[in-house]
Length: 153
Ligand SMILES: Nc1ncnc2c1ncn2[C@@H]1O[C@H](COP(=O)(O)OP(=O)(O)OP(=O)(O)O)[C@@H](O)[C@H]1O
Ligand SMILES: [Mg+2]
Image (tube, rainbow, N blue to C red):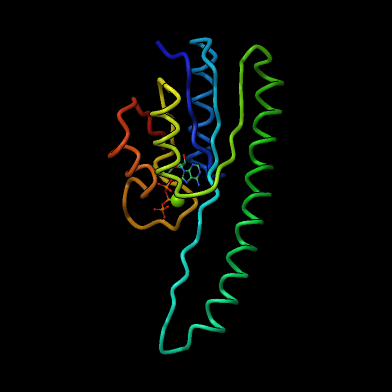
C-alpha cells in the first residue's frame, strides 16, 4: 500500500516523533523513505516613513544570515537522521531533500508530483505555540494536499 513515504522535518519534537512513525511504516511496507526539510524564506516588513534605505538593507542581511544558519541546521538534522536510520535499518531506502521556500507549498508540491503514498508530519513545529492544535504548515498541507497524511503529536 505504501511504496513512497514522505516525512517533513523541521527539527522539532513532534517532527522527530513523525520521523519515528515514518521509519516504522516505511520499514514494515518496504517503502522508500524521503525526508524533506524546507528553509523558510523570511519576510521583512518595510516601513516607508522610516525610509527605504537603512532598515530593509540591514534586515535583508539578517535574513540572509538566518537562512544560511537554517541551511546548516537542517543539513545537520537530515544527515544525523540518515546516519541513524542507516545504522538501525540498513535495508531501508532513505533519501534526504533540502529545499528553500514556503514549507507547506514545497511539501504539498513534492507529495503531489512525486507520487507520495503517505505524508507524515508533526502536529506542531518549531514555531511558538499559538493555542492551535495544528501549526500553520500542517494545517495548510492537510487543506491543500490530496495525498494521505498522518499527523503525529
Ligand atoms: N520548514 C519545514 N520543513 C519541513 N517540514 C516542516 C517545516 N515546518 C514545519 N514542518 C512540518 O510541519 C509540522 C508542523 O509544523 P508547523 O510549522 O505547522 O507548526 P508550528 O511551527 O508550531 O507553527 P507555525 O509554523 O504556524 O508557527 C512539523 O512537525 C513538521 O513535520
Ligand atoms: Mg512552523
